[in-house]
Amino acid sequence: MNIAVILPLFAFLIIFFMIGMWANRYVKSSNSFLQEYFLGGRELGGFVLAMTMIATYGSASSFIGGPGVAYKTGLGWVLLSMAQLPAGYFVLMVLGKKFAIIARKNNYITVIDFLKDRYQSQVIVFIAAISIIIFLFSSMIAQWVGGGRLIESLTGLPYQTSLIIFAVSVSIYVIIGGFRAVVLTDTFQGIIMLIGTIILLTATIVAGGGLQAIMTELVVENPNLVSPFGADQELTPLYISTFWILVGVGVVGLPQVSVRAMSYKNSRSMHRAIVIGTFVIGSIMFGMHFIGVLAHTIIPGVEIGDKVMPTLTLEVLPSILAGFVLSAPMAAIMSTVSSLLILVSSSVVKDIYLNFIRPHAVENQIKKMSLWVTTIIGVAVFLLALNPPDLLVWLNLFSFGGLESVFIWPIILGLYWSKGNKYGAISSMIVGMSSYILFDRFAPNVLGMHTVVLPISLSLITFVVGSLTVSGTIHGQN
Image (cartoon, rainbow, N blue to C red; front, side, top):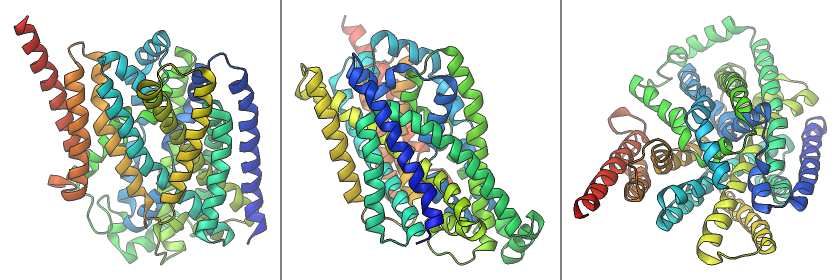
């Protein structure tokens, strides 16, 4: 064990716990447990909103898995990663004011609250809740694995022991502090991510003898490492352009991100978050993935991509500084886990328990159920993370694609198309979910496009046809 590396991480875990304890005062004193525990009282300012969106969107995939792929693929994956640059812009500009105004007016707590009210259908509530639980479980597993592997790399402890440390640390501050604890730690973690990225990028360039020397060595090893199409020329222009749908435009359909669009304080906060968020997420995504490529010459021969970033950091930085920098991916992982955990918990409690099991539950019952559900979900994800995949970036991207295929059109067209109805929404969600799973399993990247493109296209067609056909039939009968 390298104590100098571990101490900064341990200090951050204590800070997160203290934030959770502080936020718990609001949970206890709030007049509405649901509003406070799942939305933080809708009081997010611009800087906090930007940072919580970045911290939620940036994850183990961005700091561990993505750079691991860039290590093997080359600069083409850096280009691909920059498709994430406008993610926050799209979410806040497309949903933005309209979503927030409707949410405040009707007291929505979750995205599913909006879908239920807009389409007047319990079937949609059930499909949406099940989709969130299924796909976010896979995403949470990826984050749990990333946290476990990071602690394993730093401490030398067995993976299972490292996973327990990570799971307990995250679960405590989420369970006791709710959404307010999540966004406050997100803000702190977002700052750490940005600073850590800058430090590690600088140290990596210095350790490699400068950018020119590193690039020359990459070209000597394999000229395709500096090509936009990847080391094996697998990144075609069509795939790169369609990947933009998954991690750029399609982010509007991610419930864990879109819920932020109903939790900010005012319009000024939203506009400020767009500017700050776009700058910070661009800096982090470019920096971390570019570092992954540069690492190829400094630590050659790393077999498991997810170990590239921890190994590189310990190689190029002094121990105490390495501990600080490695708190950046830890921060990203913890913030994403906490956001997903609170979202899945809200789906189970607010959208299933209160809709189908106990509609008239009193405040104390809801509170106890929320705490128990959050705990049980955390334990379940921990058990599923005990046998991790080699590259968790793919697990995370699978979750992204599934959620976008289900939610993007019911959310967007529900806001902006008055003719959209429950028949179109239900059929769109079913077709989106089923087609994405089938394409992902049996025919990924059809015609060279990213897998998500066809399911999103099919769900759009289904939504429009279903809404127009059924509404036209009902109108004709009248």
